[in-house]
Amino acid sequence: MSDDRREKLEQLRADGVDPFPHAFPGVVASAAVRAEHGDLADGEETDAAYRVAGRLAARRGHGGAAFLDVVDRSGRIQVQARRDVLGEESFERLVSLDLGDLIGVDGTAFKSRRGELTLRATGWELLAKSLRPPPDKHHGLADTETRYRRRELDLIANDDARELFILRSRTIAAIRRWLEARDFLEVETPILQPLYGGALARPFTTHHNALDRELYLRIAPELYLKRLIVGGLERVFEIGKDFRNEGLSPKHNPEFTMLEWYEAYADYRDIAAELEQLVPHVADAVGYSGEIDFTAPWPRIALRDAVLERTGVDVLANRDAAALVAAAAERGIELDGEETWAQLVDELVSKHVEPRLVNPTFIVDYPVELSPFAKAHRTEPGLVERFECFAGGMEFANAFTELNDPDEQRRRFEEQRRHEAAGDDEAQPYDEDFVRALEQGMPPTGGIGVGIDRLVMLLAGRSAIREVVLFPALRS
RNA sequence: GCCCCCGUAGCUCAGCUGGUCAGAGCAAGCGGCUUUUAACCGCAAGGUCGUCGGUUCGAAUCCGACCGGGGGCACCA
Image (tube, rainbow, N blue to C red; front, side, top):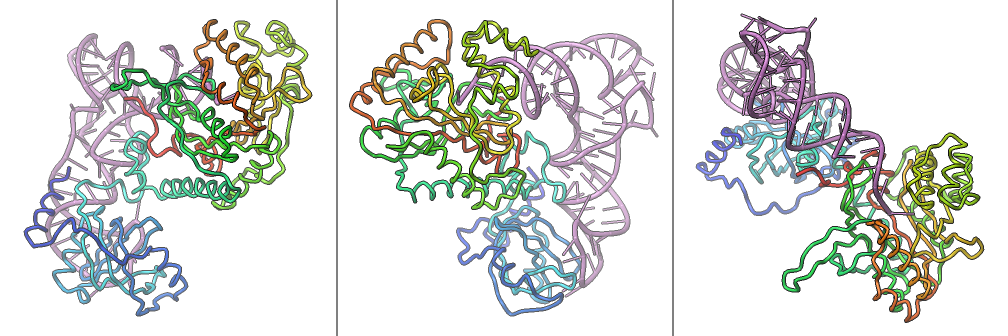
């Protein structure tokens, strides 16, 4: 805390200036001023008056005049303060502000001799005193820990951080509009759940005092959303946080934003066609211009073929763990003999296929062992109708033709119980309420989950999920 | 949980083969300057060198533990 700033605060109060006024109506974005007058000639003056507001980011004093940089959400604009325009008291008070103070300025637009669009201040007001110094005005804030723990400083100091989170917001808004335009209903399902399900992951647990019972933070909204399809809502989606009790990594945050949508009378092919329309639409909406080509259609590669192509190992010709380990060994790939066949398949995909998929690619038709909620493949025994979508070397979506046969779903849960008994702490708990809902009759349905954080990573060209989460999980 | 790297002033960084090594720029303070934009010029000021312990005549510098961060592995759809 700066004593100098404290003293200035008290001096302002002593001078009858409210350092924390209540409002400042009529502000326009600095970008709007730029849009109207960006093409002025150097040195050209106008009578156009504007009211802008923002944080004082830099000051260049010249005795009887000074240039101030004011930053708002839309950008930065230069303000010129002149003693002969503002008068002695107002001028002196303005140039003695601290960097980081929030101010509102009325001024007329002109372009300086050096070609900088500028507002000549005719009046101004302190909007909030800043009692702590801002990060370095030129170098910004580089320390990653401070950037994550004190994101407000990152947003103040680093233009690209502010732009990134604006992009994230616009991404979600574009998705919402796209789904609403296709008659999907946005719904909200429980985050606190008596039983977790819908993904293979360990949950966070918490306790409800009045009910005196354990509750789980959801690992996915999937099972509730499908109950809404049973209920006849036909097309539903939810955008919200999922929570998974797992390690942190550049691609994993323990709470993350998931989009799930479910569509009656559709299968996984329909969902794939929708995803490859949605993502390019969103990329266009946010002005994506990076390396990834999101143009539809995206390749669809069977999981077996993808693994075969990358490793030479045919996972479907080696349908038990021992045979698969041996087949991989022939190709010089060492696999852990302790794992199940399904886990080994997953490992081959994760290590040998996923990292190489840069442009969006559907990997389709997964083993049933990895997919307890997906419907059996209509022609391939032992497989389910499921795809995962990869881009930028990581998975960002997962979808299937939903299993709607309650008896088969019950068998899948019982299989999960056996996994749990065998020590798999990510096995699905048996959800009788969900099976009962399926017994009511669920139409054929396609469903998908899209990792919003990862999609934003792709659109923003960031390689760490922490960069695209405002307040990422950190130790203590 | 394991391995590697990092932690110096409010911010960005230098110093790190142990001996004026407590430094620079920005910010903040004082003075000057009415078209600058990392404004400029002058003066003055600012730090338990992450924490604790060890080795040594002497540690920001070497060693250990711990705390925090990053990367990788494990884990993870």
